[in-house]
Image (cartoon, rainbow, N blue to C red; front, side, top):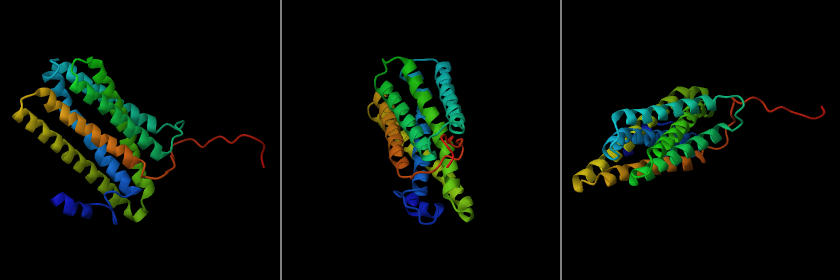
Amino acid sequence: ALLATRVRALMPPGWRALGAGLDAVIAVRALATGAFFGFASFLPLMIVQLRGEQLLTAGSLMTVASLGWTGGSWLQSRRWVRLSRDGLVTLGTLLVAAGLGVVAVATWLPWLPLPLVGVGAVASGAGMGLASSSTSILVIQLSADAQLGRNTGALQVAEALGNAVIVGLAGTAFALFVAGSGQRVEAFGVPSVFVAACAALSVGFSRRMGHVENLSAAPARVTGPES
């Protein structure tokens, strides 16, 4: 109730939850980050309890996901990447949604090979590297100088709230299914579908940001006779 009534005071002036432009950038950051860390909070336990693997295996998958994030962060800053800045965010959220979707399927069907979970972890991590860095840059590009500090702070608040709300709801679902039925597949499967749905929602918001130039890209080379 407090979030619903008071979060507006922590956001940029005129902020709307379903707004476009800067409002959509903030929504993407909250949804994508919350979805990814919701997945990360359950992955090691799922690997050990549902699949019977060792903790070393679960930790290795988390490392693989973090390496994907590093690769995505590196890629978005390359001068030869010609995608617009909003296009990089959309690509990143698509990768997060696809990766978490793969993990959700592998959670409901634990007989599927474990490397499939690794593929989902790498894809979602790479998507976060693209989207997280790019949303920070978008806030800078879309903010007036006088509002830059407040808008950057609002982005960080949105990220923290996305983590807390999405991970909290996923954890509540996990606890309810464990207490209600004791079925581990449902206990892990329902939260995995929930976080994948949040990531898919972030893709929709990424299309509401509007076109924003990628200032990190090298200028396109002009060919032909001089006018």
